[in-house]
Length: 397
Image (cartoon, rainbow, N blue to C red; front, side, top):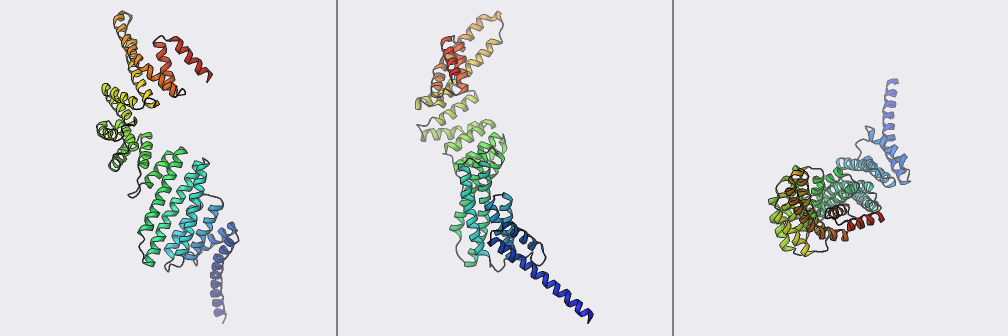
């Protein structure tokens, strides 16, 4: 009888511990209902570590809800990650789909909170915070997609339209995360987010342009060429895409591939000087100066009050003058005839540059490059009164 009693006590103790763990799950829920989140977290983390309740779908579902509320109360990416990991575990364990529809509702609420709070942070120029919240909203929407697929299978409904909306929501969350990260100066994080946003049913030209801009800034030309080809295949008529692709191809020495695209855009947008300026810069880079000048002059004819057009043509002539000036410096005093001849060439370029630099300065007197080139031009052309007046304007600013 002694041994039987001992065995009975052992079994009773085991059931007592099991009930205690199940009670811990209920305690966590009750604490959550009363807003006692720290105590709820302690109870649920004990429950999921015990062998008797570590495979309880209910325990993992409650844990996700608790961490969701913690994230809402005091946003931390780690809280969001734990909530989603807990709900992912719920999906694995909930074979009878007892929690599936409630989980869908929780995710919808969580997504809306994260999106709205991210937008609010962005408006306040809290770009890092906005990035983390937009990124979290994308992760929530990805899990929401899994849940909806499962609900659709249970109900035997066509999920395609709803899944397409969710895919767009995921893509836009990633894209917004990228924009916020780029504003925060977090270029690699921005690039990663932009790449995740890009998908077969979501690839706006601005997204390609943003990816190419960052890859160019990082001087990652191999990757840039890959995305440039994808972008051009999808948007051969987009000026924003062609502009970024042109930058990439110039660096790769493949400008001949861009020129036909620019000509097509120039024909379709005859009142826009930008593609002509890009074309001019390509010809300038290739050393085809006559063609570059022609393109720049066409741009000014279209938009005489364009700062970019006026300054670019002004710099075009000014840089040629600077090249001639460098040749003069390399000559000795015994070569005065050649020096004088070069001086005439230099001054001729400066005379061409002058009206465009002056117009550019009129359009934007704060631009330091224009100010410097204009002042140097005045001095070299011995227009000292104008140089002095410009210096006085600078001092007054």
